[in-house]
Amino acid sequence: MMNIAHPVVVIGAGPVGLAAAAHLLARGLEPLVLEAAPEVAANILDWGHVRLFSPWRYNVDREAAALLARSGWAAPASDVLPTGRELADGYLRPLAALPEIAARLRLGHRVVAIGRRHMDKVKTGGRDASPFVVRVETAEGEGEILASAVLDASGTWATPNPLGANGLPAVGEGTFAERIHYGIPDVAGALRDRYAGRRTVVVGSGHSAANALLDLARLAGQAPGTGVVWAVRGADPARAFGGGEADALAARGALGTALRNLQAGGALELVTGFRVAKVIEADGKLVLESDDGRRIEGVDEVVAATGQRPDLAPLRELRLRLDPWLECTEALGPLIDPNLHSCGTVRPHGVRELSHAEPGFYTVGIKSYGRAPTFLMATGYEQVRSIAAFLAGDVEAAHDVRLELPETGVCSSAPGPVPVAEDAGGCCGGPAAAGVDACCVKDADIKAAGGTGCGCGDAPAQAPAQAPTQAQAAVETAAIPVKAGCCGPKAA
Image (cartoon, rainbow, N blue to C red; front, top):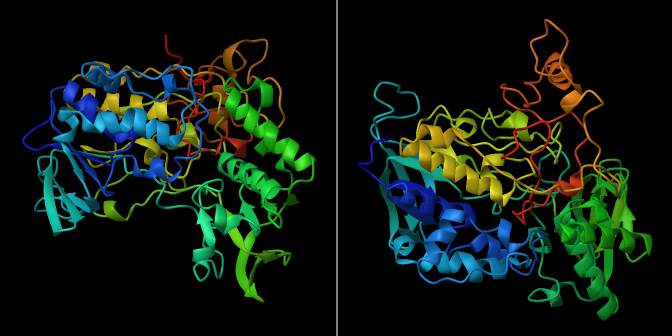
């Protein structure tokens, strides 16, 4: 068991951060939750008007539910789809208000840096025994808190990807930031006047873009002069339409179908292969210019639904072991890489995959996935359960990682059954050839290509190498159950 002279600091009071506090308490450890905003679930409330694809039963952590039940909390109907605000009001706020959590929650505490007491990043001797120093900014000024361990569940919502297709902000993007909304604007509610009667370009091809496009199309039917343009980087928008009726989450399948019908009916202007390189102004209107010289002119507003990335600046003094392009932990990268990962083969993972070269520090929740757009809320709950068990000294429970998730039906670019990455030989193509260090044919193929393996044996799992679907990119909803299938352990 870890040295518990100081609390375990949890950064962020969202779903995974509050679940972490519940699991730490259940293990007899002392959590301290630091939230930058003046209220819990601040990121979720920013998209509170959006309805989740997954029903309540996938959105509530078991340990948190047990804690709430002891206070008389009535769980919402398990098959109902909540909005972000309903998730906050019906679950997260009541959880945070429990005396056990409220006494260990500090709102308005923004974590700006983390280090080790009496040593910088270079010093090694005695490092493991030295507590973490968590520097915070509050209304009263700066302060420091000592911690035995740190779980960073701060999320990525506040650090959106820019418009630029090269990962950099488009030229001029910062200049016109007040006319660019990152995420999913509340078109039907608080921001209606901003978009009514105006021409808006939505950049992106994930579920956030789909939500924004459908909301804007409805507004166009109510407010004359409202124009909607959809700019996608790829040549074909079909992947954004998802699995349709094949999706086990009916609401998500319906979203893709509605977007397909909207596009087919001519209710929006579609521009494909458009990679934003520059934003300029002409006659009071914005002009988006692609890297091939094409332009979208006469633009009033832009919605950038291009995903998020982690803020690593506060972690500069920690010894992190990161995947070089995803910016998740190095061990987790091959399991979630959207260049390889299939949404039907999400592998459960815990403390082993989330550990860094800095013992006692973990990124959890959506931030643990770095730039990968395939995070699942239920996965985050299992992450913190595993880590809490490990910190309490229960290594066996920590490594017994389990997660049962339903089939998504969106692994292909067209609606229909999900293609299975196996042949008549069985899982992953059947047994590997004699003398080959692999558990099956697919494991051998992936290793031959430089990967770490398919994961259906004892080796670290990696999903089959197949084209990713951008319709998976729904990090803002944070709750999209995906089945852990053939190429990854499946819970009993």
